[in-house]
Image (cartoon, rainbow, N blue to C red):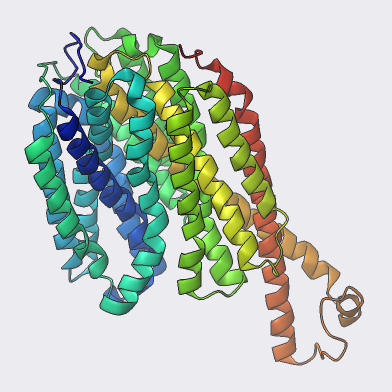
Length: 505
């Protein structure tokens, strides 16, 4: 079935074979990009040794990429409208591959951070333009199934990245995590040139003031989020300046949208209730969607003592859950109210998060694997249904602006959610450690509570150190439990909000 629409923002109709090749191309591009978000984190310890960098310095390898991504995705809509979507997509893929090669060949830390920043800048267009292409080449009634299929590449990338990154780094060095982008990136580039249709460009004038306010505001907030935990948040004058400046610029951006004659973003698209409800929902979902990927490997490595190979394998069930969730809702949303499917996905997230609160330092691999399936199942169902309902009624002419804003909201909220979770976990662990420390100040208390064997001698320095390590591990475990209780509660509170979406036809 071909797409027939008179909307100036829509792409021309394509045949069945071409549509399949477009889907394969966009899935490949999305998977390469999304995998790159997390695979580099596995190699940070090796990179730290190569560059003789401190933990705070090597963190800029990740911070630089996220900063470039967040600041650039805000203007992708205008650039793709002005220069043509296909041209921008080809340029983004080519530049992403080129900067990946340069990242793998960097000889000093400053050079690595520079190319990582450019990699974030050039890759920012890949996901929003990929989704816009999928929405254009598939009929509206097939959007759910199409986005579910495309989402496999987008969501599976960060999940399979840790085991792949660990094995590649151990075998070939950290440079290899960038080199794998070259063959797959060139294949996606070739597919784009051959199969992706050109969308009509629009000579929309640039609201420079609105663009500067948005990019500057988002950049400052993102920088504060990434550096807040290391600088003790509001105890740092740098963080206070970044947050105050970022919020002020974002406020000016909103005022600009409401008052300017030709604003950077069309305010008319916010009259679509599904769109603004979708922005709120994806912001809330982004705040907790990546938490298991970031925090559970630390739990398994530092508290349970699993080797990195086992940690990587235990993340694979989550990928299985994502695949099952995507495929299930892709088929079910034509028969079941999408809002009910979204509520079911949120309940899966509630269950998987609450289950973590029952874990102990004796938790086995089977419990972690089963929990990972439910995590992935919930995330897959939430992502596809929110994505589909958000753009279900939006006119195609707004997609060039609406889709990048959607991804900007998701990325920024994900960063804020991870930073907030880690801060809360650290504080909860410290307060719990203080309480436990008071309870075991004497050997008698420790023995009576069963924390240490009867034959331990606390006067021995090695015994005292072992007891302190035990207290710290227990406190960290309780911190995880308290943090995931909060995550489960937030996901549960989102369930009633699901029905703010308009009921689909």
